[in-house]
Image (cartoon, rainbow, N blue to C red; front, side, top):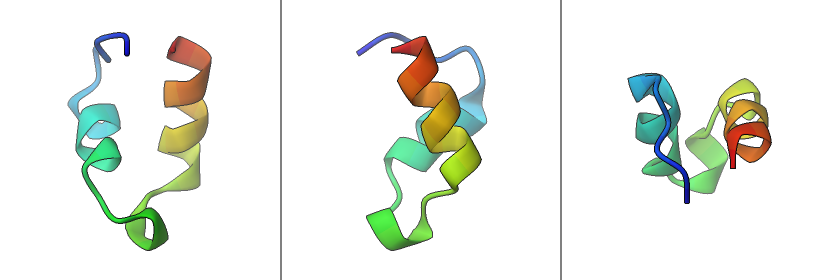
Length: 32
């Protein structure tokens, strides 16, 4: 997994799936 420059992205990975924000998911998938 790539290191995400934005701490919000990393924080989102640690949330349960139902609490994750889709925009952060999308950004993470594009970065990774």
